Length: 271
Image (cartoon, rainbow, N blue to C red; front, side, top):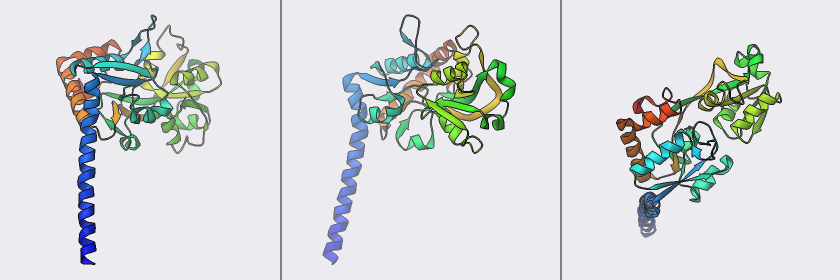
């Protein structure tokens, strides 16, 4: 009996050593995998002002230029791949991409699946309505009786479903945040719940959505954006976070943020 117990103890001790070594090896290999290929494959969706196409079809945006600047610091090349937001976790784990760099909201649930860089933008979820109907939607109680829309599996959807007053509201999910705006513009939905950073950019005078507006004083969910990486990738995180700090100290990050009207939303420790 004693021999059996001792053997089991030795077995589990060896197993812990093997698992520990495997975890360390995996974290090291993740950065080596990126560095050896001299590129970081970045997953994104079209999300103005973070990643979007300009009039010439070129990919631009705050996150696009931010990623390019970080990769330049790390002496690697960014490769941007448009992904389906629903399958982002699978894309990352299977190494089809190396990072999710697309206004990615940090949540406690997501921390179980991803490693996150230092947060770099402070955001919130806001309600967008037609200007002519603004007086109808001033409170959460008003929203509870409205037709709501948000992007599938987005922070906007979480804000709706996580609010006791809104979770039973008439709600439809759409593929993209721009689709949510179109729902409101066409009148098939009353209220779109989307990222403030996107709303501020998309609803400017002269835009296709200038007949829409953000409901003032109605913030549904404050949040932070960070870069998402494969779980247990401390070396990758260390490298990227150091590059972000360098860009912040040099003022380069602030310049990129100002270019896309995100100076106020930049995290305080990076200004």
